Image (cartoon, rainbow, N blue to C red; front, side, top):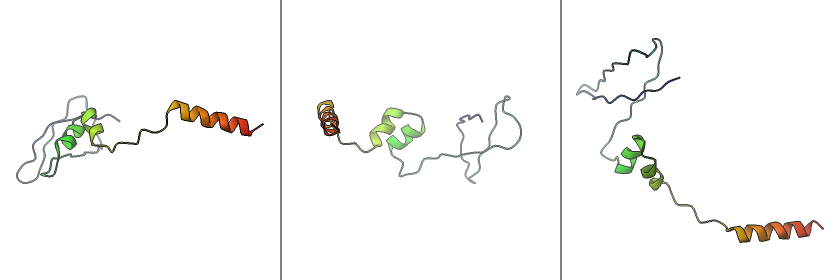
Length: 83
């Protein structure tokens, strides 16, 4: 399956008109319409248009996690318990 992106206008009667490139095969296809709303943020719009950095900024931040030293200490303690 191939995908193409086309910039189109939604008309006042809520219609869209598509002209596909000549290499598009005939037959069934799926159409997904992404449109902006008043609630759309700049990050949403950038993410839709492929701006990965802007999208990543919208995600919640994870806690820093554990460092190498604490993981290694746990592994050593676990190994010592096997003896």
